[in-house]
Every structure is written in C-alpha cells, then in structure tokens.
Image (cartoon, rainbow, N blue to C red; front, top):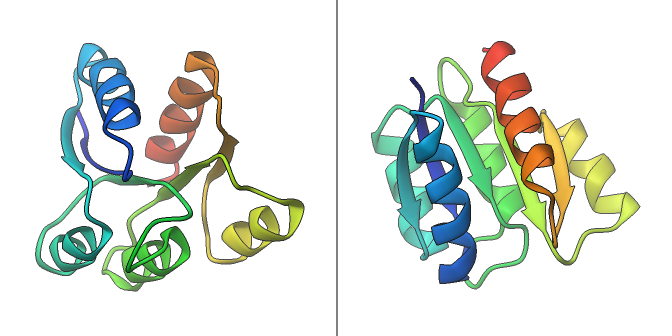
Length: 120
C-alpha cells in the first residue's frame, strides 16, 4: 500500500498510529526526532506525511512545507494536542489534507489517511 512517514515526539503516539496503519497494510516509518524527519523528507520518497505540530527543533508546519516542496508534493496530516483554529487554517493554507486534535478517534485517522492518499 502506501509508504507513510510518521513523526511525533511521543513514543506512545508513534506506536498506536503505527500499529493502526500497519494493520491496514501500509509501510510506516516512525521518527521521534523532527530534525531527522526533516532530513529524510528531502532524501526519500513518501506517499504521506503524518506529523505532530509542536516538537523540539523542527515543528510540524516546517515539515509540511518541506513535504510540499517535493516533486510531487507529499500529502500531509497534522495530529496535535496544541491545535487552534489559527494553526488549522495555516496548515490548510500549506496544503495539509487534515488536521486532527489529540486525543483522536481511530476512525478520524483512517478516514484522513484514505482522503490524503486519494488526493495523490
């Protein structure tokens, strides 16, 4: 299925979303360090980026910007506990497919992933 880069500084989030996506048949590359994620985005090809918003070093908006500079652009989803209407609008302006608040429902994640992969 899809090759998904999953970025979050919380190991439990990486594990739960990673297991969900793998059970749907996706290849998941989990990364806790946002700086490392910024490096792999520029070097590798992915079908989807799922990222937290607030992380040390490089934030989710910066990762989305890098993802959308690729050719072809990588669709992206933000999952964050620190969201606001303003950040949701900013992420949409950058081309983010979905903005999901933590705690999240599994159905919201699977639906956002489906929508993002269809938009490719």
